[in-house]
Length: 375
Image 1 (cartoon, rainbow, N blue to C red):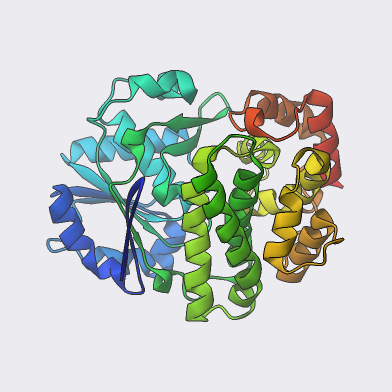
Image 2 (image 1 turned 135 degrees about the vertical axis):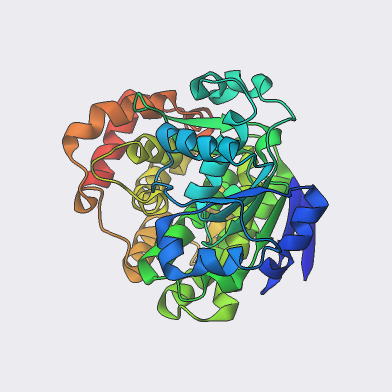
C-alpha cells in the first residue's frame, strides 16, 4: 500500500477500498450520504463499496447526471439534510465526485450556489464545508484529489467552484474498481488524464513540482492507455492509468489551457450530452498545433518522454493515438452542430482555464479551434 500526502491524503492500492470504514471513523463521518450514479448501481460497483459500511448507508443519491447540474446538487442536498448526514462518500468518476463537492458546499453555506462560483467565490467558502471521502471508479478526471468542481447552473453556464475546503479528506484509489471498464470509457477517461497532464505541463505558470508530476503522468498515460483499452482486465495497465489520473489531478493546480476552455462550455450543452474526456481528446490535437510556437522546448521533452522521433509532429501523433483507441473522429460525429459555436466560444473566453493557455487566445482563435475539432 502507498500512502501519499500531497494536497490531501491518497490511499492507493488494489483492494484499498476495504479500508473505507476505518477512514470514515478517522474523519469523523458517522452518517454519510452516498453519491454515485445509476450506471455504477447497475454494474454493482456502488453496492460493492456500500456493503463495506459497518451500519449501511444513511442515504444514497444515485441520480448524478453525466455533467453535474445545479438541480441535481439541490436534490442531493435535500436528501443530505433530511437524513441529518454529516459527510459524503462519492463513488464514481468526476461527475459524482463533483456533485458531492456541490452538496458539501450547499448543505453548509447559504445559497444560491452561483454566489460561490469562480475565484470570486473562493473566499466565501469556509472550513465548515461537509467532509468528503472520494472513491474513484474511473481513471482520468482527477477530481478525487482536486479542490474544484464543475457544475452546470440553471442558466446554462458550466462554472467552477474552487476551495481547499472542497478537497476530499481522503481519496481511496483502488485500481481494481476499474477492472472491466468498457473500452470507450477507458479511452475517454484515460485521455482526460493525459490531457490534464499535457496542458498542465504546457501551462506558463511557474510550478516545477506540478510540472514534474504532469510530465510523469503524461508519459504513463501514453505508454499504458492502449493496453488498458484493449485488455480491460490487465491489472498493471489499470494501476498505471489510475495513477496517471491521480497525477493529472494533482498537477492541474498549475492551470490548464484552451482544450479545457472549450470542453467546459461543450459539456454544458444539453443536446448532445458529451463525455468530458472524450471531448478533450478530440480538441487536443488542434490546440497542440495552435500552441506549438509558444512552448519553448516542452514539445521536445514530451516527444522524448513518449519515445517519439525528434521530428515527430506531436499533434499528429496524438490524433493517431485517438484513432488507435477508438476516440470519435470529430465533435460533429458526437452530435455537435456548428450552430453551437457562438455559445461555446463565449463560454471559452470566460473560462478560468483560458488565462493559463501558453499562447494568448481570442474569440477568432477559439472559433478556428472549434471549427477544426468539429470537422
